[in-house]
Length: 120
Image 1: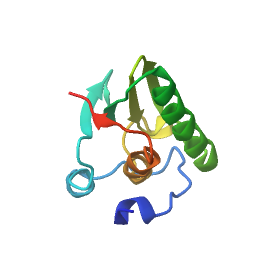
Image 2 (image 1 turned 180 degrees about the vertical axis):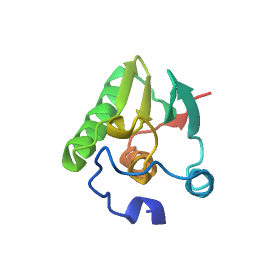
Image 3 (image 1 turned 60 degrees about the horizontal axis):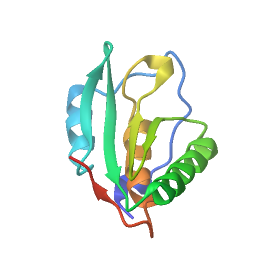
Image 4 (image 1 turned 90 degrees about the horizontal axis):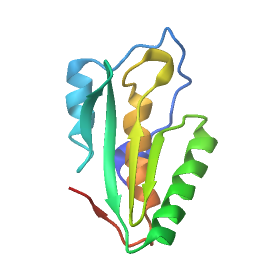
């Protein structure tokens, strides 16, 4: 388990700060394969995973969904045959919070026994 994945999420409110440029860089370095992209004026963390078939991609999606429910912080997940793309950002602040980086790290660990590889 990565150090980032071991951290706990904080409750996030509209007054919660987005990560600073320095924090964003430091946290992003700990997330191999994750990209920070601009989507309609806000940044998000995104990563695509490849799987052998639809059932494995669906199983992964369900595990990420359970993680999201447990933390009450929900990503966007695009599910396709043999592929799932996960995007984390904090809706209440319309950008990236430390929680997003923590849950991205946990998403990598959710892959578990599903044979996946980061998608290009």
